Length: 381
Image (cartoon, rainbow, N blue to C red; front, side, top):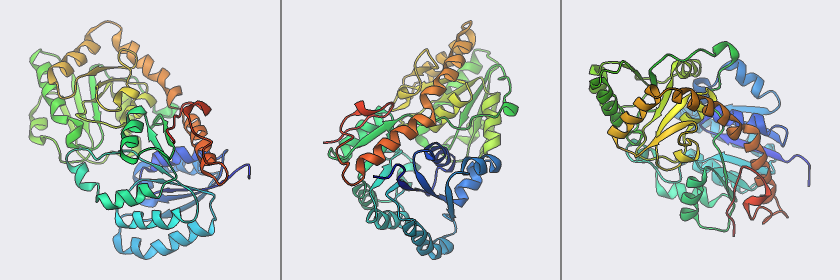
């Protein structure tokens, strides 16, 4: 077997995440990185992206303009197949084009599938989860799965059964600031960051903040992200709320994370969270719902506080405690910074490299337990 397998990493979305994975995987594999140009422009700082992809072959394609996307798909597939990959790694996305691409590529080499959400969330996320048939086709094509956290691993295992490895790693650190971007946090500033989806509990956070206002607290709450699934009028009339209801570019997101003293994740349900990974990347304390996979990353009284989901009173109490209890905010922020090592991309790349080797011809069954490497864990028959 070759020392460095030929890896096709196909990423129709999650551009920053994918680039960080590929950068970390470069020492382990000869890589063709097929990436959505549209996602890259929205999520990646150009200078960093150029440096991060210096050691891989790059192919960009469009995912937004439908006629061009359809016309360019044969060329994208041809380039992927001419690369002659030993392993293919794809992010799960179940629209028709990506399902077709996945089916074709899976005939050429073993396919590893990253599943970010084993089940769709409530609200608009459910509508976007296209159809069950495409999801079944994509998952049926995989030789192994990659998820973030033990909660997701168990959830996916219930859905796809045993017989194929399900490797769990942490979600890697996101949106880390450069030294020139680092700033002191503003006292009493709370940040909710990301898409405004029903399951993220924005209205619960607003109710908690109203309770804090009623106590006479002079905190600031920043709601930064696009999406319609919250009470916008309520946010606009609530004292101390700053609403930035649009997509937040990479550098602006880092600036908001740096200004925040506390990052809030009031989710009603959760699998894993890139926002928690970004909070850790910026060394910021967190307050989060004790739901789903959030507890895999947000460690109660270490880098954040956990509260029951949907409980505005408990959320208000936790926020107030963090700001009012002497030394607690500083302790949680320090714990968040220390958590970066647990979310290191090099560890994730090491786990994925073992997974790739386990599904190469002649290697099946090698990854039968999670004892072979850290931090990943696997379930297989």
